[in-house]
Length: 370
Image 1 (tube, rainbow, N blue to C red):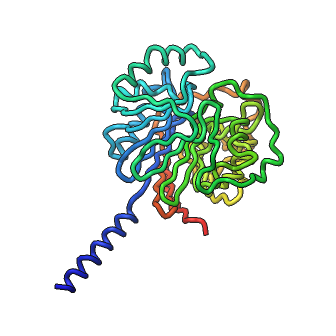
Image 2 (cartoon, rainbow, N blue to C red):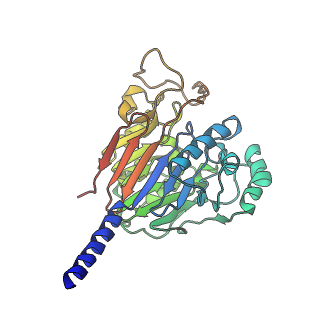
Image 3 (cartoon, one colour):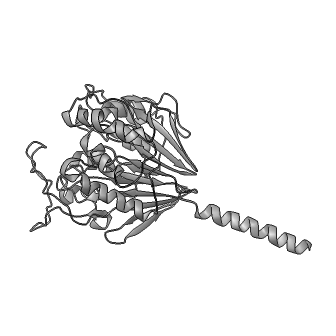
């Protein structure tokens, strides 16, 4: 009998260990053509969606792409929806999405600050109806969102940043020696809700579209975050041009991500000034991009195996040089309503994670730092 009891006990331990090893955090980086939509699914199936893509004529397209990811994850509802800020490429698909799947809890940084007509109308006429049958929380830095098995901390919101250090944070940030504060960004980007995600030993940061001075407040002179395994690159991978730029060396270099994922468009993000920072961050293993960037050309865009979507219009030749000009002179992208591909990230509690490109089936696994 004793041998049977020992065997049963050993079996129970082995089953427990196996279950622990198979617990995972799943992340879908959904292509919404230079907007933002990132779906997290915790080890018990609890879900968090950050942003809902573009609105207007593209609302149905982007909501449909999110629903495809939701179905792939086997979800029947979205438990938590975080809207980083009130720009149309971040909240535009919300009402359309809510017509397809229940959303149980909404989170945002509070009222809009820019007064854009479409945003004002949405917040006055649509948003109250969406949250009426759910819940709405206006978040502050330091707040947490309760997700079984995942530590989710709000690190920026409403232009403010956390005052205390996360586990692993603290200490002087050496990259701050070259930081020069810029004029404050009075628009929506600086209001972004930024999230730090911890799953066992795996850590990630999703900063929304925070801009220069918010990045400085978060990281200088003290690094409140520490390092992360995965950076969901902010502001679609747009560069640190003042006063409303993003992805400064003070943020990216101090985080020292093993992997960065950029949810960019063909003509939005990925320009030389941002890619120079992202590709040179210490300890970097790879960068993955939702689209080939015409703004970076071959000089500043990663190899195609790491790109989920290629062009919105086929080109006669692969551009080597970045697209010349400025945002005011770049041509508007043609509509892209065809097949879109996402990145899927699978992380385990020991800090190992795998990124898969669903366009070509290529996967790469990243093991914990030693």
